[in-house]
Length: 291
Image (tube, rainbow, N blue to C red; front, side, top):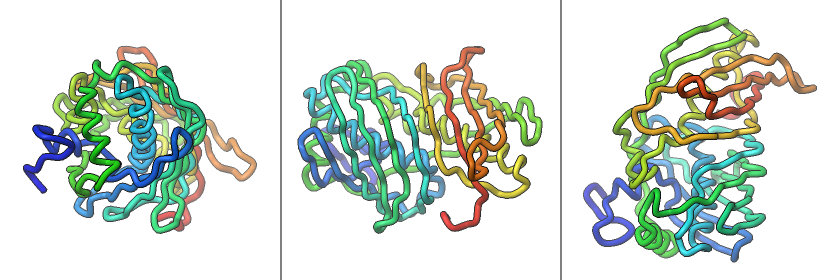
């Protein structure tokens, strides 16, 4: 509902919709398990698989924040392994589940999964979210009000306006071997209203999607056929990226790395020559079965 207020008096839709991927928290079992749902708006043309991982992480974050009275919140995350089983489409409703191993004022450790109509879409394993001072990024009272909405009737689905695909400018390219590109982070992306209101930070999951695009191109060139990503490991983000920043993204092919012949591509991101993010991505021949 354009122009409506969600999450409490005076809270604009943009703040609780621009980069929010939980519509309702349906079940909380103490600090061990939480379930929720999120419906991808049918009018959104671009919803990368990395945002499914974002939705799982946000569900875990709500429980973590509520546990510490919203004084601290997970911001930086390390994901040991992400398994991608199938893709999602606009209009799909994600059933989100998170199992929490531990949670305190310093970190939350969890694993999670997302499904659509009983079909497993994505799994997060060995994930750690570092807890930082909430007041640096958002207003604790507003987050508390948002949580009340999510654990009650839920917020209205379909408010996410979508995000544009980032523009990548190729800097160097050895087909099948390496690929480097420049990405200019928007100075005023709509998602900064949620990520975060008091200290805008470019979402790491959008950076990861851009890196995935490079890696998939490189793996496809090496294989001589279309490929699909099956898992991502060792995701590390070492620094925040501010609005308007320029990043250098790179992908390096590391040949077949698994007994089943899946290909490994190493990716990373640099800011001012300093590496700020990295991951390993695995690809298999795309049979079209995951579409």
